[in-house]
Image (cartoon, rainbow, N blue to C red; front, side, top):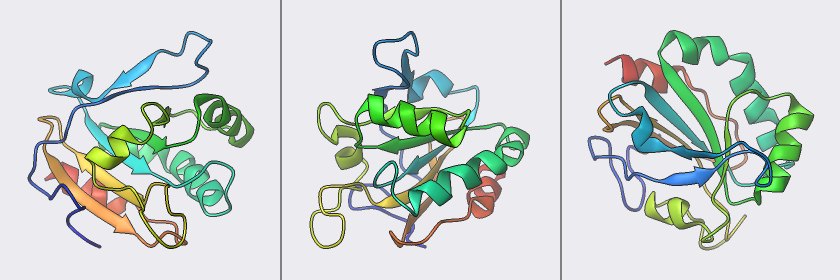
Length: 163
């Protein structure tokens, strides 16, 4: 587990962002990280691509462990560069009931800010697979840039957020 990305390390203030969630033509709205400041921990689960095999294992695992996130007073969100329509279709297909955020436009802006854009090799142009835990004060308490072909675990992140 790396405790940093290309741009951030544990202990840094998490850069604020606002991304669309759900059906962009519906009434799903947006997710803004700073809306949780002072209220809840947030776990950011960056992933390379909807409908891909490993991501299609990771997101259902998050759904299965949703009770652990709730017990840790943590909101969990999936983030990828996929278009909102694709993310919403995938979320519905997998039966997920947590936000899936689209970093499609401007292309990968949040992913780049968080230092997680893959620039070469396998899955170039996509996000790294990463878990970032942000506490109620907006401080990054956990970073795991995970091997792209493996599903990460979340218990260590939740433990770091309990402090």
